[in-house]
Length: 434
Image 1: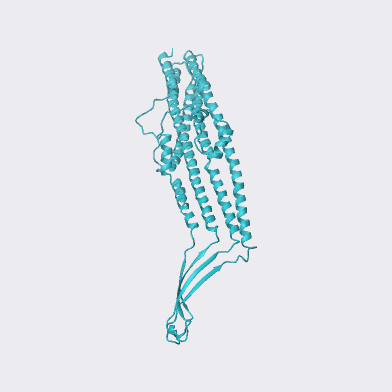
Image 2: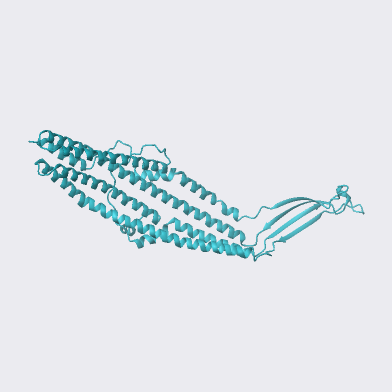
């Protein structure tokens, strides 16, 4: 008779393998909140685009300023035979200053266009930040899933080793078959192979997360073992579309670029009008008049302006160019808005599917699979169930448990995609009414 204590030990191991493991409070764990905060403060790509924004904020005052005045020093009517300044009455050493004045309104429009560009760069920073946080969260949840899968594999490896011992013992006492031992060993080898594959994937995801956090690629990453499993109720897509239209920085940035393009159209039309240049020059003369009086200095005043003589090939073409650029920005906004709505719909579809699967695994499939394993063990104890069905039921439970954590991680990743697509936090109906 096969020892009952050995069978009950195997049953206990099954339930230990499927139970949640206790949380270790001693191991340092990188929480999702800590990872997101660290990415915001240390990611070099985000820092680079912020520096670009700071640089563009300095452009509007420059664009709205007058051109620098010009100070000139001239020698006029200098005789080339002697180069004697007092020789000729018209010889003078001249010093002057001139200032260019664009046609009224041009400087304001230049500054306005630069301000819209700077504001659009600010939206680019926020858009980049949202994408960075999405990438961090998606990578974090992928790592979390891999950790849970590796834990399940470790537990099932131990369980299969116990199954091997059970099968060997039954075989030695004439109550089992050698093929049962070989089957358990084969399944154990498959688990080892899958473990190697998942460990390789974990190394890749760990390096990716470290890069996003500006850390050494080979730095160890330890995650918490327990997370919030409750998944919020999805909002209607129409409400998410309205949120995105108000909050998505990508759309806001294109809107500001449209405003900048409108300012440039107005500026191009202003180029039909002339720019001015005003100057004042003082000419110093030396020597004496025939009546022995000192020669008087000369004052020269200058007013010049540009003449848009070639407006058909220059100014008119510039207006056409700016209008086409405005039209391009408007079409780009519509195209981007279509893509944003597609992103929201795709993320919402993934989230609904994953959320329903998580509920199905949690309340139906996994409890039923555990009951099946328990029943198979009881039947195996009294030789009413063969070893193949016992191992198969345990492998099925193991696959369902791994699929559960994968689906939960996918649901959280879909929420991260959804927040990035909408442009910020997604509040439920109850939160919005508070």
